[in-house]
Image (cartoon, rainbow, N blue to C red; front, side, top):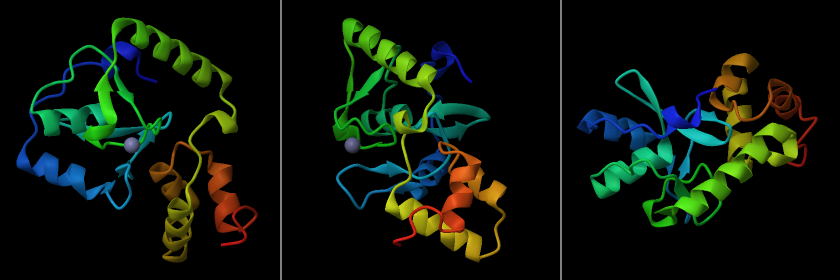
Length: 163
Ligand SMILES: [Zn+2]
């Protein structure tokens, strides 16, 4: 897992193609703009010039045309996969410390209820990919904030059986 330092490193300049690739993976149908690409610990990740960056920081760069800088960006909506710039703001120093503490506590716990779970849209997508012949481990790569067994439960309808 990347350390905090590398997560806060500056975002490189984005090409039109990068921005296009980014927007392709954002679901803007709701108030929160949900990143649907790959994730680490519930935070979206996006690759630019072979480096991996947090998606909400990339969104900040695209929208404000400047790097978010060394401070953490806080989600006013508490949805770590949200990339809506209107829901993001720079944290003050003390808030950064608090947030780091809260995140550390959340990550060290490591139980399923402390992580971002699947949404209904995810379940529909997982079942669709599986029906199209994609292997569970391939599907897992796109939904890696949950466990592989969770993916198995979804496709075998041991969970979300009402859908
Ligand atoms: Zn949001």
